[in-house]
Length: 411
Image 1 (cartoon, rainbow, N blue to C red):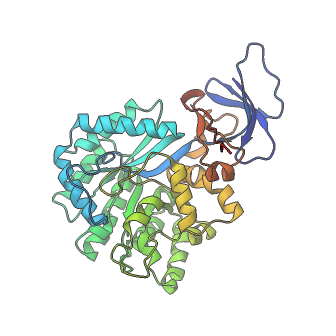
Image 2 (cartoon, rainbow, N blue to C red; image 1 turned 120 degrees about the vertical axis):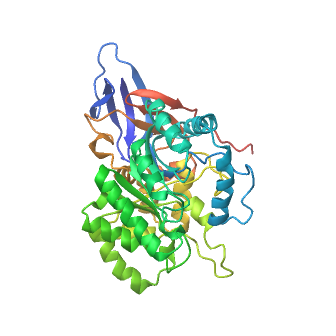
Image 3 (tube, rainbow, N blue to C red; image 1 turned 90 degrees about the horizontal axis):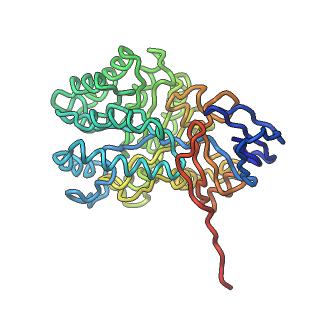
């Protein structure tokens, strides 16, 4: 196939893209068509690497209000609601919901997902089912599974063994939730445990770290220190880190040095944390987002994720990462022209670093021909006008498509 007139990653000049045997073969201006070659004119539309969901809980998706609604809107009531929903979990239940969400994601150009799967369940039903779905959906979606202890490791019966069992079932990453553990001592021990577990099994680490408004919640320094000491660096990710918005600046100044030395990644979830955080504040109310701008300016990798889609923690969500980026830019006050133009990187190249995708990701000759086409000339325009993903190609095969949207006033 020959794709003509493509504007790759905000490029001002259109190029052609030749795809053969599922890979990018040539990218240049005015490529001459081969005899009988299929030609697709993109008409100067934006072409980006496929979108990446850095952080979501597929096992909990589409369960809001079942059996009860989170009336307070807090993280901790969400955990209580989910603990009640877990009694109804079955393979069929999980499979049906995950398939629905996968189709939502695919229609919005998402081809890679890192999902956190609750393993504080003696049956490990969700973990077993997600491992099966990872293989079942691999032709349309690359899924990484994090063994996630929603109710704690030290604070949940047999928590350590459940984590070990989840690794045996095929987890790609191991997680923790230090701010939910009963004590500071448990918090530190849980982080030391998962770092050792990851190192022993050559796995990645992704921790729900300090997702709370309490400035005394400082699991991040422990996680970063261990990543540095064990030389695991960017194999480690700190998700949420919302307590960081409450840290005093003198502490952050010292902490930032460690964060840069450690090389760890960060994931921010603007939609959900704007909704969940600051719930006990009167006024002023905290925005609830980690220090994305400051981390980015220090050269630390930050990507964005949905976190939840219509579940006990977030009663909305549609699989469109545009909404995540749009909210993130606003609440992080990153609304300069270059900030907006380059913000697609939070859900593409920066997210690829978080997921440790390596050289197989991106638009370049020799790589898998995976990309999306948007109905816009650049990402500023795509974001501002909520441009649809017209087509999503995975290894040269179209897996989703939509039609351009016509908006016209009648006066």
